[in-house]
Amino acid sequence: MTSPEQIQPPINHSRLVWSMGFTQILAWGTTYYLPAVLAAPIATETGWSITSVVGGLSWGLLVAGGSSPAIGRQIDRHGGRSVLATSSLLLALGLLLMGLASTLAIYYLAWTLIGVAMAAGLYDAAFSTLGRLFGEGARPSITMLTLLGGFASTIAWPLIAGLESLGGWRNACFVLATAHLLVGLPIHLLFIPGSKTKPPVPEPREKSEPRSKASHHLFLLMGAMLTMQALVVSGISVHLLNILKQVGITAATALAIGMVIGPAQVVARAAEFSVGKNLHPTWSARAGVLLCLIGLGLLIPGLPWLAFVAIALYGAGNGILTIARGTLPLALFGTHGYGARMGLLARPVLVAQACGPIAAAFVLEQAGASVLIGLMCCCLTLCLIATWRLPIAHKPE
Image (cartoon, helix red, strand yellow):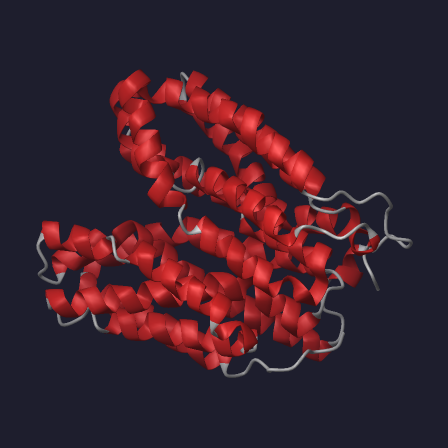
């Protein structure tokens, strides 16, 4: 059935995606990537442990996971403009509260607000918005959005570091909160098409979930694959430098190797946008998991030149899988209930992102980098097997 937005005047795809790409950079940079820059200054000034400070992000991810299904259903019913605009308001409020925090309780309350905003404003909500606007033709827009979002850390880290060096971490939070109010919020309200009418029949929750037994099993398989992949990626994102050092690579070389991930992700997403756009998302997912698996496996020998190749392959695979996270549900289940389905998928993925670094730290401390890499390769092998059980045709409800 045609959604309300689809019967509105034609949408300027390029303007929409570029504007959403800008707000994705702003949202990712001030949430997921924020502790990398501000955790140490916050811990130094307040006296809180670095673990407690970084734990705010894990708590925010858990809150986001709990909020995602309801947010997905909201997008299905009313469109994404109001949801994304609300995320800008919540991010502004959360960052303001963080800048004012004098106790850990207030700091974690700030992350609670930010967690809800993450569910309402990061990729899952953005993908759901594009899916509702463009239906099964949303894949190029989703790919382009992730291509732009891939620059979040590249832009945000030096910008936030500059703000912190000029006025301290609290003022940096205030400036970022203002950016969400004066930049992010207007972009969401002005450039994202709204829904002038509601769907003719409200969709109850059960209609937004896979209904047949086969569809249910397929949904669980896809969710398990994406969750396990998120567990690996979150662990690598936090502990890569320590892993490289433990396999015998010097700190300076390890840092240079780590910097390869971002460009590799962007290149892979560009290739997906141009060359891989005619491939079914299942094939893209298979390729992404395989590249990640080969990349991590090549880290085991501890050879610096090979590690550069390994991380480039891993980054490329992760870049492709970010796109597949939005395009697979659309291709396999169609547009009906896409937002709710994305919300349901986001819950275990976000929980995995919260728990992955903790689990990886435990294995790294107790058994070492080689064992951790081996376990991650086992997880990715299971993911690869799962992708070969996914169909390459639309699965009717």
